[in-house]
Amino acid sequence: MDDECLELQRSEMKALAAVYTLDSSDVFTYSTNTSGIISGSINVEVDANVCQQLIEASDTGDVNWQHVECLPPIRMKFTLPATYPISAPPQILLSCSWLPDAALDIVQHGLLDIWAAEQGMCVLGSFIDYIQHDIRPSSEIQIRLGGDGLTAESHITRIYAYGSAKQHMYFESQTHICPICMEEQSGRHCIQLSCTHVFCLECLRGYLDVLIREGNILRMICPHADCQAPDTATAISDSELAKLVSNEQMKRIRRLRNQRRAETDSTNYAMCARTGCDLVVKNDTQVDRLCVCECGFTFCRMCRCTWHGVNRCAIKDVRELVEKYWQACMDEAEDGSSKERKYLERRHGKAFMRQYRRYIEEALSLEYIEANSVQCPKCKQGINKIFGCNHMTCSRCNTHFCYLCGSLLDSSHPMAHFNNSKSRCYAKLMENVEQVVEPENYDAAEADQAEANLLIRLALE
Image: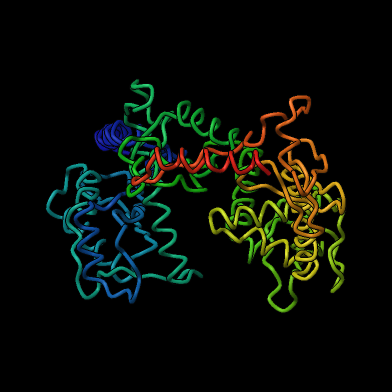
């Protein structure tokens, strides 16, 4: 091998290694065999502008290229003959997943043209520059999807994945300021959410840990101030959560989501009643109240017990049920909300629950009568005085009695009881009489005269 050629080849490898080794070990590799022949490969990325020109000019059907910013690299394998670069060109073999062989042959001819123009000089750098910037779309050079055992959909998925990986590598190579701790962090210790806001992993994990412990899954949104308003809130996706929380925390998040779904749409969904199962179950549309979970447990949506068919749900505590139903009726009368009442009636039967309601109303009526009335001393009829003096006449048996002490009064002279100084109700005829609100045209002198006449008449009876 010519010493001058060998020295030029070694210098070219050192120059390429200085450029590409910092990026990734699989971008540029080379080796020397026992005969001193150098061979290797370089992954050459096409310039972004060239990528867009190729995408726009290629007929790829209905494929959505909207978010594709870069294409996978063209792999250039090279072998340097002993007389390269003085008299022999490098042996080049191109391969690419998105260009057909005919297009690669055209690119390779372009490389040979460069060698013809620059013979005697190291040209691998010029080859790389040509592939990066000078490939232009034509009838032969167009993007090809599919082939090599891949469908077009699988192919575009790989292109998306490559683009994401490149963006991630670039993100990790930069530094970012976390808006929570306000410290500059390496991209390796940060994460960028779908809303483009960047946080350090430690701060965002602490933020999520608090929300998960509190069960506040509705607040699992980007903590940046720009994302806190309801109209701009951006939820943290499951793929992002998987990078930030543990497996146990992720299980708790799913369980809380299922619980909320069952609570907000109880008509169509219910949490599985089996202990340890956190799945949400869609109600059977054919059989009322029937729920069949994926775990195999079949239960009633109303009582959450094992499925009991058309039989009424079992009642564990009648008193508690009656109190719940009465409270639901009171809430409905107060704010118009009938959800709880309808739920209990559907679970236990409308006629059954309304029977309890009548029982409660009767019990409360008796309780009110007992607390707010006095029994007639003769027939025991409860009498409630709304207004007037304490001389009462029973509407049932026409008995005269005192409302204060319950004593029988002489029907011919009932005021004697209140005029007798030895009676405990002495001078208490008008005791506990509610103050009447005087109307605007109230005549005090006329009222006093009427009251005096009444007292004189009662004293003479």
